[in-house]
Length: 290
Image 1 (cartoon, one colour):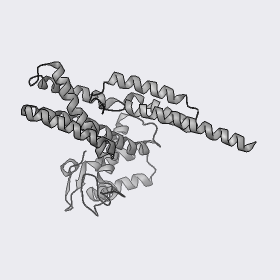
Image 2 (cartoon, helix red, strand yellow; image 1 turned 90 degrees about the vertical axis):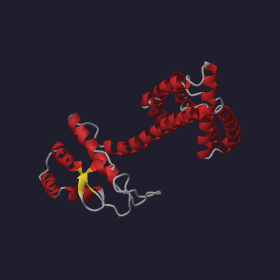
Image 3 (cartoon, one colour; image 1 turned 180 degrees about the vertical axis):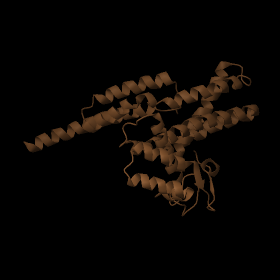
Image 4 (cartoon, one colour; image 1 turned 60 degrees about the vertical axis):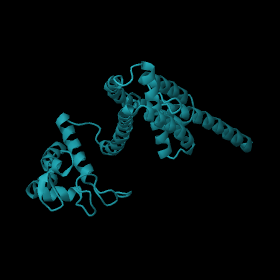
């Protein structure tokens, strides 16, 4: 009897996994910048429709992990496609410039789709999708033949590639920073006022620009400010930058001052930095952000 129930449960999980895998592919498709098959640059409305339909279907899968995951996606759904808004705004002046080289709208669309498809297939190859190599070679051959017959379009192709790169990189960078910042905000669910929030973000900026990476190709190095091994940590950075202010901060901490007072005082410390020679300089001159 237990065996029969276990087999039934296993079969049910297989069915759930198959359904989840199917809709996961549609979810990935809803987040695409460019359709790799046609080269069409995605429209926000179409992607949003597909995203909503996919999340609705995933909600019907009665599995706790899937339910939690979809709940998280629902919470951030409004921001998941903002990169398409940025790209759409950037494409408007580009299309005006392209019209000076290609008069017919159909020719403009065909050119943009060819360039965009090459870009998308190239991104797939970079990310390890071996199945994209052959289509990329064929698409690249078509693009090279077109640019050989119309060399004046080379600058337009490069410009569109840069716009697509910028949209993809901006989205990834924001996701990376959000992932880090979320850890710091987890225990700070509310702030007394906007000034306190801004002070907190300023401190986060200082920490991110001067903390040491624990692993990866930048292990033992800082993000922006120093860019070399054995750099001072952000705590050392504060102490050396303004010894008197740091001592006052420690006194406030010992006296159990309010969080707002501590942060307000620390903000005075993040306006200065120490370069590799130990000279106190404004942080923005070191390559970081104030």
